[in-house]
Image (cartoon, rainbow, N blue to C red; front, side, top):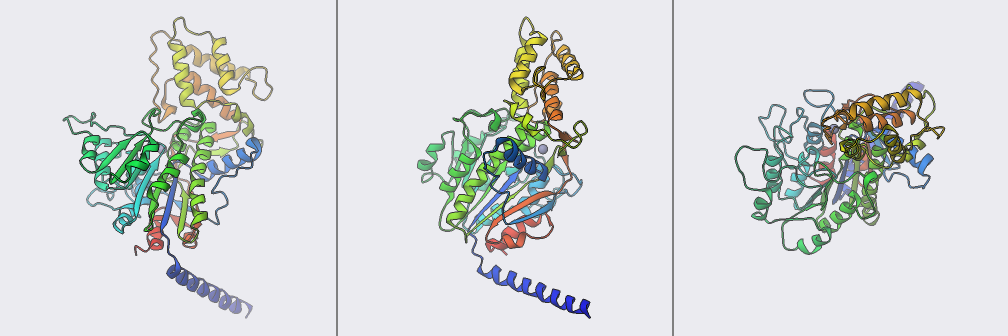
Length: 477
Ligand SMILES: [Zn+2]
């Protein structure tokens, strides 16, 4: 009897819940949608950053999305492979359909086009903006406007950007705006854009005056880091433009009574995790969180009409707090001693090793101490005999005559600059950071939601659910 009563009570609660959803659905008038994608940002990256803030920085500045009222997980698998890539995951997040690895805005066998939520919302008269810390033709932003079988077709992706007629783009720039990778000579993206009422600028302040004269605005930062990206936060100084600056400018540019959709990508969380560089990755999560703060400020002024979703396309690196070397103790405070990204450390080390005469091992150890804190005197940062041996082997490798050190920025784990790689690896191990991969993993990603319509993001999600729910909340279906 008790069981029957429980079942009746449970079904009444479920019915009440359904009724609540229906009535809420009618009353929802969301006009402003922010979709934040932390590329490669799994739950562990978020949690480790919050622990780093609480226990090391102690500045009481929680990640802006850590306490959002709705929190769940989304699976990320691609149509033809469980561990996804940014192109297939970006397409799932933008169109609501699974596709194959490397594909943008097309179905898995490239026979049909898939159309993004951004395009559909634009068709309803909303303004659309896409922002990223990497290049605007990179997989995640491209998934919102491009229809290409290969994510590497940078020039063709940029041509699709012009066709999109979206209102505002901001990024580190383009990878191949002149089509140099193609055999035939082609018209530059800038020339094509100018014929279609696009304007390109590297002056963020000029956006305000340009917006009344052109249909579409494309901002690229003036001094991009490698691969047309924005510098890592750990390498920035106070004069550098941040993702938060771009988000603030995008809100000013796109805000209108009809509404807007904005996708903001923290693209280099992924790169830092590919490089197994924890200090840089945690700083990128903070940078991303600062961008989300701009949207939260907007939400506070328009709480009934705003929806903010913060998620990731996949996890990168198989990141963990805790590793085999340290068992049950974590030492995140050691990461604070790292002053530059692994990328910049590699470039710096390459410059040292290119010198004639070559630097001594002692000189290189001084550089290690300056940039990472690792040395022989500091107790917790003290290099063991085995670590000194490893660094010495890397040093001997790097000073070989005529050694051509190639730095491949995106996937630094593949770089041939062994000395700085070894050094960052030692610091990560000492800090009790675990990395199981230099690629992506199949872990589900967290989803944090604030604002009207948040109630629909409950329960276990798949990444394809997210644009479908946005469409429903904004009144597309
Ligand atoms: Zn990646």
